[in-house]
Amino acid sequence: MADLSPEFEAAVAASKTLSSKPDNDTMLKLYSLYKQATAGDVSAKRPGFTDPVGRAKWDAYNGLKGTSQEQAQEDYIALVDSLK
Image (tube, rainbow, N blue to C red; front, side):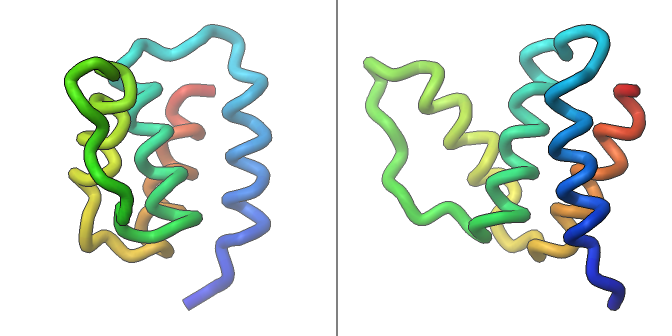
C-alpha cells in the first residue's frame, strides 16, 4: 500500500484553510478521522455528562474503532477534498 502521509498532511493543512467552516457533524467526522488516523483506536475513558462536547468527540472517535489508520487517512483526505 502506498504511503499516504504526504497526502494526509496536505489534507490536514487544507482543512485549516477551508473557505467556510463545516457544520458540527462534519467537524466531528474530521476530528474522529484525524484521531483514528494518527492515534488508532480510542483508549481514553468516555468523558462524564458534564462535558457534552468531549462526549460527542469521544463518541464520534469511538465509532471508528477497528478502522485501520490507513483507511482513516484515505477517508480524511476524501472528506477534505469534498469540502474544498
